[in-house]
Image (cartoon, rainbow, N blue to C red; front, side, top):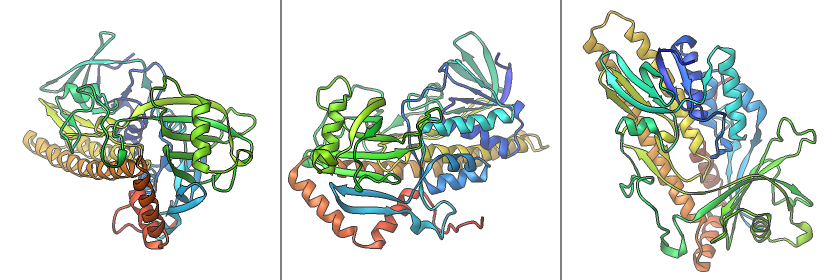
Length: 443
């Protein structure tokens, strides 16, 4: 049963929502003052992010959440960009050792990340209320009134929208959500496929699939690192993930991502095998076999950011994190990272605000403090989201070129650039999310 009132209501129990709750607890908010709801009857999430970068791990460590996540995942030293067996460039994560205690990209399924955050919350007495679908929200003198599909109404001082790219909370707060380049809401109108220079289709569907591989796995397919292959089919991501906890054989899961077959209505082993063979460029007997598709989905790349990440509604405050605040291409594995970092920061700020709320400061001083702290949060996180959108759009464009001339020129440029440690180390730094001036903490 939902409580009648709460200090912080978090709507959405994906990684960003769960992480925000953990951050609130770590910064001194009592479990009784936090309520987490989700519209789904169980933890179902089809986005399935797989990479956690160094800065995100640093932020998770600051709230005591990194250790079990780090222990569960694979520690990838490199992200390799290849044209068949030729390595064009590679992000060199060990070069980050002077700046972080996590000089690698952590490969872990989003489901595992969510489960480990959920276990931490349960140990501290925070329950996830499911299914609880928000239908309305309006401000009042003492906060926000949030209505649910079952008829319940809850009063909350703060509402955190962590409910995905089609966020109900964002819509009810009347916060626009649009592509910073075009000004269009990606969910507001039907999209049409358009072909850009060199044959790149900016809205063609993409595949993600978790599979088991059988047969020979060549050295060009690393069992510990991120592999991105370039071919006539665009790109193919091959990323190893830890075995399922309930798999007695302990089989490595491989995440594959590539362009969908034009006009196809389902994802088949034949299509994945076709792209895998062309991407690796080896004879059949040296090419891995797609043995089992464990899970798959098709999606289209969309980019958008909320006009602001917080909104005051009468005496209450709405804040956004994760996909509710920004969405973009999965290139570079940035999506969940940005959302987790949003959540850690917002939890800290809301904890500070709740403490200030309990002082003898005047009402106007309290309102000014909220505006200052959350305004700075909104500006900082939105600016970072726009930077990531620009980077992921460029990476998506570069990996999706269809013209033979453009692909050849791209591969030559990448190969020449990839001969220098400056480029490979810089690539790792850009993906890591680390900030200038960061130094590794002593362990």
